Length: 287
Image (cartoon, rainbow, N blue to C red; front, side):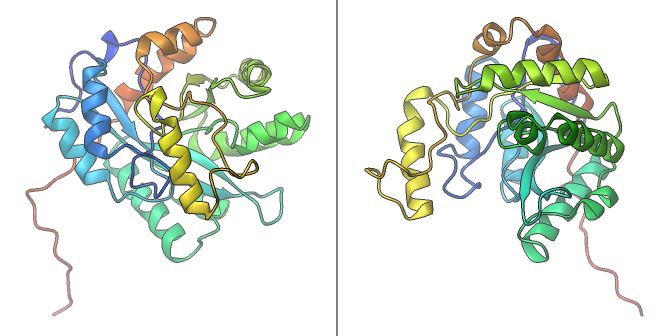
């Protein structure tokens, strides 16, 4: 089956950081809703990158094929920091090929069964083959250091990830949901991207389909955290911009960074996973 769908290059932007309802009490959108909305908005490819889990992958893959959308299979995984003790930071991973997809499964399984605080870097090194990695936005470790004026630590972390995934397979993702300091952070990421020859990728962390769905998503977060909606200190995403934005909105938002938009198309073209539902995969036992 050829998954290099026609039209991937016709779109000026592809969403690469998307959460579904399988990211428990984090996203309001089902896999089916995400795919159908992506088709309605003219996307020819779409990623699924749920947090630490891959429960929705097969349903997403099948739904994409039904709707003539190229499925980009991924995972947002918590990675244990080598610099900050007892801290983990998310990282977005996308499978380039079937080898990478198998490694995503291993990474998710490791976090679910052996290391719930996140995957250690030494394990991640063993599972990096066939993967493309992107920073996750303001929650990322590199972004954390930049926001705190620790550029040396940011560069050290950047170099670590480029060593793990390869210089051509690691991207600095730029996002702008109107959060405080985010504009300055985008400029800093663009600057260190130029200094270190690290490519940028435009992104918008997706938790719901439309802007008006943001309150429903806030309710989910409150339920997950056992908080009341009237609590001023309760967890929020911080704006109503975490929706599946049309490509035209993303192009307007990042018009100063055309290469970051173009790189989302490149990544989408580079990711080609084909799942086999015909062959029976039975365990082998010594006789």
